[in-house]
Amino acid sequence: MTAKAPVRLMTVFGTRPEAIKVAPVLRGVAEAPLLHGITVVTGQHREMLRGVTDFFGIVPDHDLDIMRPGQSLSGIAARVLDGLDPLLDRERPDAVLVQGDTTTSTAAALAAFHRGVPVVHLEAGLRSGDMTSPFPEEANRVLTSRLATLHLAPTPGARDNLLREGIDPGAVVVTGNTVIDALVAATSTEVPLPDARLRAAAAGDGPMLLVTAHRRESWGAPMEAVGRALAHLVRTRPELTVVLPAHRNPVVRDAVLPGLVGMPNVVVTEPLPYAQFTHLLARSTVVLTDSGGVQEEAPSLGKPVLVMRDTTERPEAVSAGTVRLVGTDETVIVSEVSRLLDDADAYAAMANAVNPYGDGHATPRTLAAVLHHFGLAERLPDFGAVLR
Image (cartoon, rainbow, N blue to C red; front, side, top):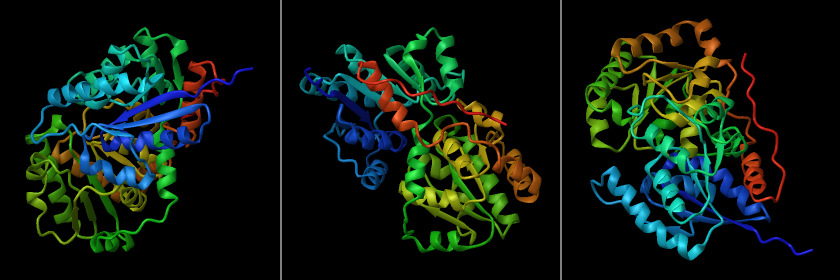
């Protein structure tokens, strides 16, 4: 009997969130005898990407190096298409795996589609129902679903979204979210905090509010309201430490930071390496964010999450009670953070809710689904979260 050649799986990613979620898969591919991995980074988040790839030991085979100062979303897409097409011709992968909803993922899926290469979509089926929020992610994920051959949905709800859109049920596998696999790996590793201010914040016994903000749809007045809310909280609650890894975009910094300058209970840092961030996440009391990934990570650590958005493509956590949508209204943000800090019952209800996003075993389900697509393995049972 002739042994079958390994499946050549090209994984393309370009941003920090993508890197975090593909890292466990890349590790699994490297250990799987029936898979041959080809790793491609686009460089959409150059500096922020390096911390993740270094931590997880990811050494890309190819770097498209697409970013240019002031580049538009269309420019990013065009450079991914232009850079990836000859690489697909040279490497001849059996499938291309993309993650989530970035411009990198959609452009890479389109490049593979143009070459007739099957697309595997990791974290498929998320939907907010509003093409403008989050922007451009909702459009990206919808477009990628139309191009994909194999859809790896993180939750049963994401699977149901795909089925409602007419996707073949046999092409959808519920894996759980690989971000939980990455989180388990990161928080089980000892990681020093080089910044003395962060070490002091982590060592303190008072409440800590961990904040991330960057969404394009919140630029301008909404982001300025977030800044005012944070300024109000730190002025009126001297016992509260606010830790804010500030997004590098000046639009975000100019809106959020002015009211926080010089406040002794505020620690503003550059974007943190992934492992450092997860350890601060574990130390935090409450998380205030507009990030999709943080919505998934924090509940695994028992942290209530207040999401500064009006809609979310991750409704499972809202239903489970681990996440609450608070928008960007200054008064609402202050009220909801205060409620969790002052009301032990309200805090416990969110902190103890079941995380619907994963069990730390999404990677083996992902690899089995890919191999099953090529007739080389059986699918593993789907992930199914039981909410209480």
